[in-house]
Image 1 (tube, helix red, strand yellow):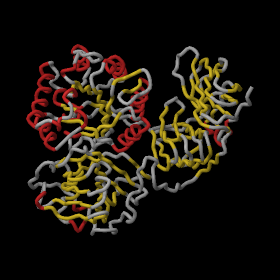
Image 2 (cartoon, rainbow, N blue to C red):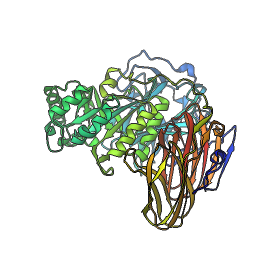
Image 3 (cartoon, rainbow, N blue to C red):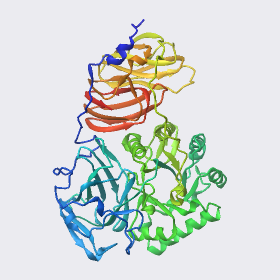
Image 4 (cartoon, rainbow, N blue to C red):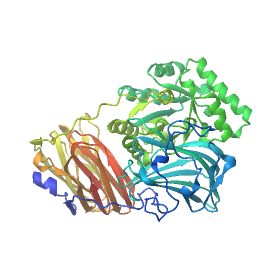
Length: 636
């Protein structure tokens, strides 16, 4: 039998991994690459309005009551009308007046570079408040494929970045809503010191955009998500719809009228049933191909015919919304959609403000990319009250593919949205300004638990060589700690399987190579077995220690280690932020979970990592680390 760990061992020990834990009242900030290819960008400047340009006063932000032309708008307040370019400074290029391009006032501004990037920066002498506001910009694309906004607070270590992809075929005006895709440090949006507008163009240049009407509009009071199911596949009705129904959620389903009732597609009766549950049945003429490849009059015929067909089928509400085939768009296509439809969806690889101001080119994210930024986008929408539109393809039992999403991944996605507390809304809610949702009232102050949190349970020892399954064993409700060694060179994974199938199989360990490690999870009472995949000899001790309120560590905490381990129990009364680094070549995975069994994957990256994340938790919690090199965590 394994020796039972004491409660104190769980707090201060790090399993079999060499790790050091210390409490600190002040954490240093990590800077640089966040592990996703996004770096600090342009060096220089202190974020105080004195590194180029004369700087603007917050008193200059006001409503605009003059004439304007789309994509300038009249909602909210103008941050910059680009009338005084002395307030701005250019980096990696030039900023020049463009009076002939003005969307409001007497001039716009042209940003141009011979290279593949141009940047303009605006400082604020006395800071501005964007904590309850979204930011958007009128942009004319002449030679650019990405538009970025950096929102810098106290300094560059504390900032938010928005990235908006632009279709290669697009030249002309559009309105860009800046939804946050990356977070560095702990930005204080009540004290924004600088905004950087960046355009990225062709690799060999040049890069040129024209900008006007940079403004802020009031944000909603809770994060929002739209689930957009593409194609009207049978699996979306048979598998996905019941999963949403049990949560009380509605969605959008994008259908081609010519394919309704076709092989593997929903029929009219099924679409009508979804509409009865509050779903939008939206226009998606996928069989017609990319609209910009057609003459304009043919594009207009496709737009009119698709909408009319849906209306005749009785889907008037959803027929107001257009989903762009092949994610291909030009300005004339954009204008044709704006003439006929109330909203439009186009791949943009990021969130947006809520409500969006460029509503006919709302960006969306590929839903199956759970490890490619989807969870992070949901987290940031939760934290900053923005909108994420998630594109969901057909649902399959196997692993997600290039044009499919597994049932497990969909369940993970829905659980994550629910865990973060986003309101799931429809496109009609967005258009009709009915996005209030059913967000619960803020939790009351969480008081630290007293007494025993988990009773001591069972202890078991297992050993073997290569891939194998253990004998059946019984666990009690509580925490299960696995301490392991592996003497192989390949991947070492351990699944905790419920014998009767009453609970899902959980991955207890996933690591590579040899050496010791540890992992922990909250389990339900039941009979289990271990399913091991290995290429060498291994040993696993499973223990259920008692956890008492005296064991709860307080934040902030600094932790470092090598390989796989866990941290906890810790205690918090609100969401937790992490600063993490990893110096390894393999997978770096961080999961957080609480005493109720609520779980969230915070990081899933390969190779080196240096960045920040946050996750929603309260009360007693633990953090699992899977790594193949040295790592550090700063938890607060």
